[in-house]
Image (cartoon, rainbow, N blue to C red; front, side, top):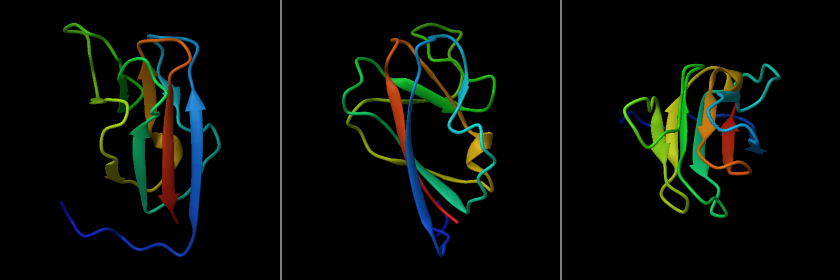
Length: 102
């Protein structure tokens, strides 16, 4: 893992999904950033998946992206825009929480 890129500002968000099996953007607003820290909400029933627009949270061979288990460590991703990241849920109402620096 590379050194964490420093930013001059920080933002954060939470997004829930009511449509399991559908990739949802973390934010639909173009949001420039240096990096994003992502976690599954501790209130989730099941893991969520993080990735690109093809991400799919599933308990079978169709799964795509990184699975994040509720209450586990935060994932760090270097990327230039928060809106490039998507998530999917297994259970309706489960959510992703994130912070980013810009």
